Amino acid sequence: MASMTVTKIPALKDNFMYLVVCNATRQAAVVDPVEPARVLEVAREQGCRLNQLLTTHHHWDHAGGNEALCEQYRQHADWGQLTVYGGDDERIPGLTNRVGQDDTFAIGQLRVRCLATPCHTTSHVCYYVEGGDRGERAVFTGDTLFLAGCGRFFEGTPAQMYDALIGKLSALPDDTRVYCGHEYALQNLRFGHQVEPDNADTRALLERAQAADLEGRRALVPSTIGQEKRINVFMRVHQPAVQAYVGKGTPLETMQALRAAKDKF
Image (cartoon, rainbow, N blue to C red; front, side, top):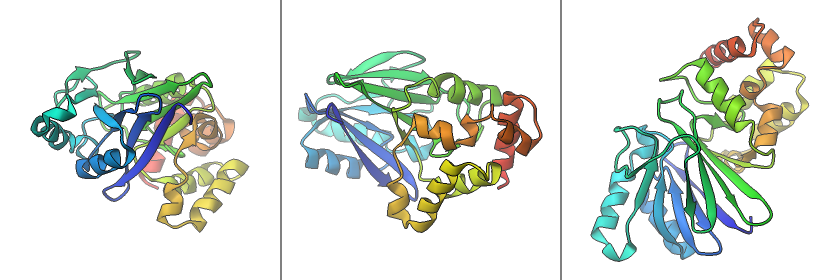
């Protein structure tokens, strides 16, 4: 994308961290920097100025590096201040700016809008980033939306996940790039293929995932909102075939039963 560069940085076993750089100003933000030393290394390589941290939720594999990164900035005053964004949750380390639905801020010339998506955790936030005259856009979805899947309902309800996936994320433009928090493609696509065996889009992507090594599966990210509408059964709970798989007659009941089925898959 001309307006922004998004660098996908694998972490831990299957996490993703993301460095988001405004190409016009070289201002940058990092999403969920659980391995801060690696983030700083990538930022140095790219010659950007990193002063913003975007936390999707408090779980240690996403927010566990916040305090260590903040400490680095306290030790290096010439780096400037590090602003830490996240939901209204005292469990998020280093939080300086609490954000909620439709709150906005900027990364250089990039526009960021916050989407409150409680369910996986009560304070989960996705970050929708737009930039440039070409309408380039990306969304960082943490553990709410994965490629072909969604997060577990640890602290919320099926209605909340329905609102997050159908009410908010599905409403974004179809060409919005989706940068999720984990590489779970193969398992999610296998489940989706079981739910919708006649879905040609799911079958084709599953064949790609099955033929790939770990790096190849990581390369499937980013997805797009349009692709997720075609392959992600949790965003397809209105489809008769998806409802029939769990024996439910409404999208909300289907969301609940589908998550329960995936938990046992």
